[in-house]
View 1 (cartoon, rainbow, N blue to C red):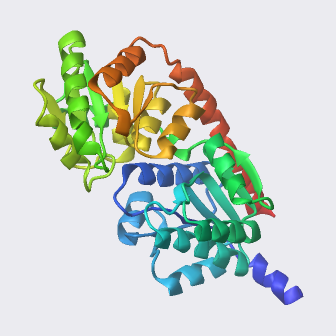
View 2 (cartoon, rainbow, N blue to C red):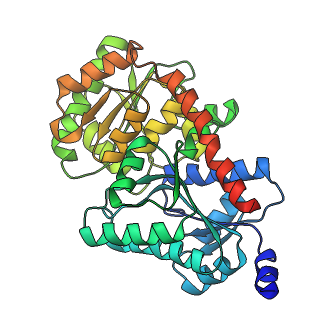
Length: 370
């Protein structure tokens, strides 16, 4: 028994695993926020990350990083870590693929089997549509996870619907809400590279290529044209995922009459937040486009292609959310005008969500100290 206790005591640090190194600004912002929070609270704590692109992650975040699909590296690091942190983001879902869900469930089970404390951190849940996957998720989470912090109430309802009962569960908010924008000089430079003037009036659209998007692209184009004609807002297309967001922007831009600017490269997360902070209005299909805008108190409209978008806006008590499938130019313009008129009250609710986010770190530190 004493040998086991000594082995546990030799463990140290936190191993973080999520959708990192895949070229998505939202996920990278989550990782940056998590790393920053630990470094402020416990600068001496070693941090390691499982990533799709470990060299890039190590350079960008100043952490030890390992290839997430190397099972030998994953198991080795789980034996070394004291706390396994799964999150944030929507990892427990099978829309992307069942294999993705199975991977994250495997890491949760392996972490517990190898002696780690386990937290699911600021995460979204679902949708998990296949009955077998729902049963598997319930079985693994109940047996493997000590604490689950969830980014909105919808995720709590979903994980309870799986039948998870044994893990401690708390509603917090998304870690990316706490990330600060870049210094003004860096934001000025990023805007200048896009052809934007400081003090200009801008609408940001953060689109995503998704089933049904191209049929609704005209709605974005007509709304953008109307906002330019009525309010003088030039359209800026920002990429949250560099792989296809600019291609979605091209589809909209080809149908517009008003001038527009397209960011074809992915900006660092803090610069993206800084640019969004200078927008008059944000219309976003991308969840983290909405989260970044909300964190800066910018008026916003969500166009939902996934329940996670609706869930976040419900947590914001925000009714400016439209389903992609039912989108029309008229409904989108009406929602945009409402947001510009300041009827959403988002700044105050975002401040409350940022305060609630601190519970994520508090729970992680509690487990680290056990």
